[in-house]
Amino acid sequence: MTRPGLATAAATLLVSACALLMSACTAPDADHGFTPGGGAAAAGAATGVTGDETGDGTGDDVITAAPGLRIEIEWPQGLDPVRSAVVKAFADDFTAQWRAVGTLGEDRSYAKGIDPESSAYRDADKWVHGFLKDRQSARGVAKVYSLTVPAIMGRGAEADACVDLTGVRLTDQEGTPLAVQPAWLKRPRAVFLQTAGLRRGDDGAWRIAMYHHADYPDERAKECLR
Image 1 (cartoon, rainbow, N blue to C red):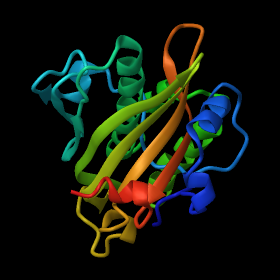
Image 2: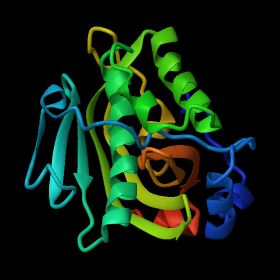
Image 3: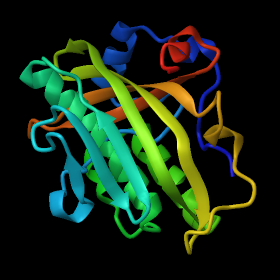
Image 4: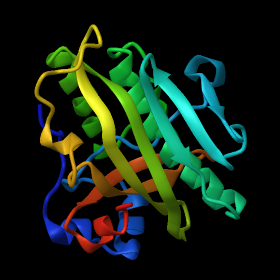
């Protein structure tokens, strides 16, 4: 199984903040890369949230997305309330999409964090159903860090984050790791920069409208290496 729906064109990955925000304010119709990221992980007791400070998006969180599958989130400090809400929407949907994988599709809360009219919604469905079709799940630890909101324009926002999937392993539906793991879960491809365009709805909630990513050796992805 390959990492679904990921764009490789450098020009796409280096889209300007202004262009991204304009896309985030209208229904996107262009092809773009997708990697899990953004949604509705606020189902506190159901997700088994633990960490230094889990309620307000500060400190570090370790979230149990599914049995044997955890998401580690390093929350940024000192953000204003709007940027905090954007960052949380991004990280929540990342968690929720992996929860869908880890629960074999039983949990679909990720759909709440994505604009239903966007291509991000279609890509998320395709990504989750790819695991179900191949009768696969995942275990291990995915990390999200260096979360930033470089731009906000009206109802549109851009959120960036570093993602490290080197601690994740694909499994069968019983949780046994596959003998051969895909290249996208190994260095250098497993560490990358994820960018999302978000829209704020009439209800005030931020939802993902589009995704881009930058893979190593892109300079922006190199900044995510530790």
